[in-house]
Length: 148
Image (cartoon, rainbow, N blue to C red):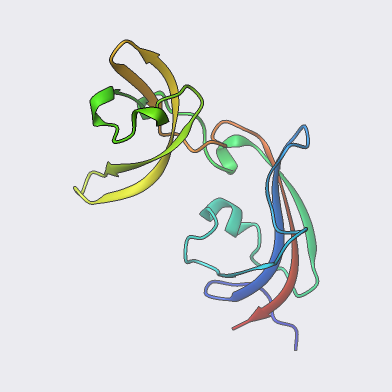
């Protein structure tokens, strides 16, 4: 019996995420496959949705617009912080990716990544958009195994 990928399936696969000009952002094809539980949030939901219905040994290449992958860039995700909130001043360099603790509307906090965009005297402008937000991507998968 062939299993197909559905919610809560345990899937062993190789995948890659690359830009439309073939810059690879992430790939498991040259390393160890990943095992993910569909619906657990390891992959963004919009990418996960492209896996539903695939069978073992399936290979798929999807070309996704920005809004269908990691979303569009949101100017509200740019924030200005004072330099003194950074524990290590050496990390304050334009282009650096840092881990930041952010609070959501429910006052819960989570860790995410932020890019340092600009430094103005004592102010540091960070971007909390996902690094791939606003980019069209190519999402390739090879399904190696599926368990219920």
